Length: 592
Figure 1 (spheres, rainbow, N blue to C red):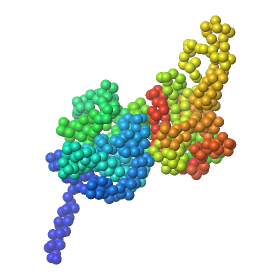
Figure 2 (spheres, helix red, strand yellow; figure 1 turned 45 degrees about the vertical axis):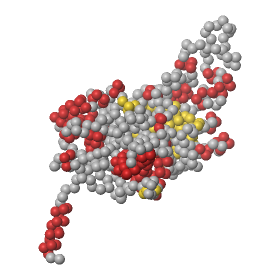
Figure 3 (cartoon, rainbow, N blue to C red; figure 1 turned 30 degrees about the vertical axis):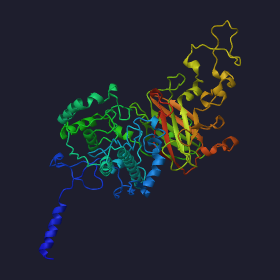
Figure 4 (spheres, rainbow, N blue to C red; figure 1 turned 30 degrees about the horizontal axis):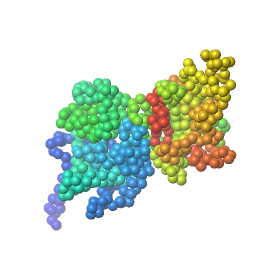
């Protein structure tokens, strides 16, 4: 080999290394060259923020036998197991969006078989593996879809494989049915399947320009032309602009002022959604309508409308809080200065059925003294809703959910040996009943017509009286107040605690503990638009016959425990009740 030849090779290598590399949104397994016409010569591409994960090989497609049926690999089997445990409760056992909790949610859980994915960065709107990975990791603020970024990277990738396989298999079945009815030829199947399931080239995002007052003005102009008819001239959506998605469910426009974007508010992400729209929703595409400069001006204007920090506060995330071991008695009430010993944690929450007037989150603290444990929950609420007697009245409430296992399913537990959950539910109307006396129909309807009951001591002198005395319900015989007599805690006017202890082992299994084993105590203060609630219980359950019969489904606490807890809030003024509520994802409680 001559010296001249070696020099030539070195020059060629150096020249190749000097070629700038183009990064494109949505690129996954291999470099895909963008259309030269769509990219200015000076363009650089701003990729969306993706979860920080170790570099791993590309996610492979499922292996298939000759007839096209998928052979389940260990990775797809792991994805199936994870999906069944964490995702099926919303997305359904078959991935069709018909989970047991789906009826409580809007936006509805995604139907993976149809494959109308909203957050994509590809030209054909079929998500890349990175798109799916990003959505699973970050969740979708503005919906009930939680983030799963706390799972190991291998588990996240296994979920991507399972979702991709579920979608591909469903589309294959549709195409094969078309072959049988003569809509397609057998030879067309591979091409049709690829067209409907394989992600296309990535969207090329031009470089983000700097903004100034002139460009802000131009962004406002474009906004009024393209967006104000639905999202409102000031960023607040118009009530009459509510449209419906492809499945017939209401899909109101997003409030830009509230500043919560399902796929994040990064410029490159907004560029993809504005250019291509969002599949299955009324959000249209503006590709070809405006120039790249106008799109960027619009993006910057929309970003300027959002309240500072709103996106971050809406992002559900897993946190840890501790219960220090303190000497002496626990705080006497929710405003006791002893709570300063407990470090607070803000826990973001999301409504299952999305509304803009929601509870953003709560602050939780915990303390224990080796004998009892107490938790304090604080949240902002503009109204004090502490009566639920009339049909149009709904109470404020808060609940803590303790998992009985270290790795619980998404919500409400399951039927496995240690899959149950123990829930402490505080209700504002019960607190008021304890403080001011039981409120029944007497309080809601003071001019009601009243009968005399032979078992009651509340009687008129004779039948000629037209204004019979109205006595408190507690003066009646519970045998004749059927709900009270049957042991229903909701109807019991003699309760001494505003907290109910409940247990569950999956959706539809929630049940209350009997009145004689209700040991969780509670106190609450509403002041200046803020609820502060203290819940307290012995760390170990009493060793009496009543508790021994039911103690297996209640949480017992020990120093050194590291256990999952989650929270729910019901906002009475918003009509929250039952499954209509705001929830958190699992947090971790450390008992020191």
